[in-house]
Image (tube, rainbow, N blue to C red; front, side, top):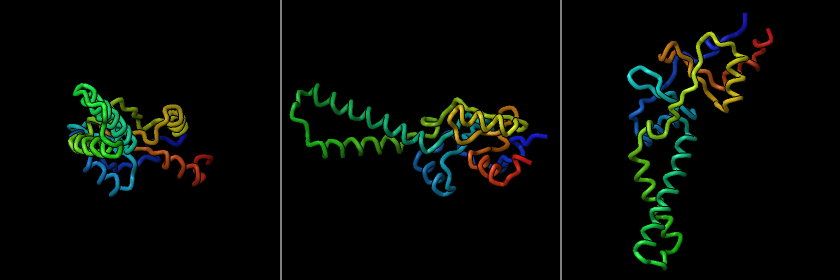
Length: 164
């Protein structure tokens, strides 16, 4: 009988709410020593959020702030822009204020790739590689029942149970 997701999944999963603010998300990522969480809204799995999602959003916000700053300089007729260090400091301050207002729902991946508990480990590992993901929520219907991470697969291989 093949080893399946239910055999290696972590049944006690730390989740976050879609309306959680980003500073609190970062605190929980650090506290739990993980890089991401499933996102739950009204007991339903609605997304996955990872530290990389925050970094990606930070890059987008910085680009927007730079474009807006350039527009204000151009439209006002100022051709002698402030020194780059001053300009970047102002941009960073605006981006920081904006990020403090964002919620998990603003940065999470809503296109959730989830698996059933009876999916064979070989299938879920292939899915992780093909889709470039490090965690797969395990669901029954829309309800989260566990999670399998790439580390769980590595532990399985290292234990020698996979070839047994």
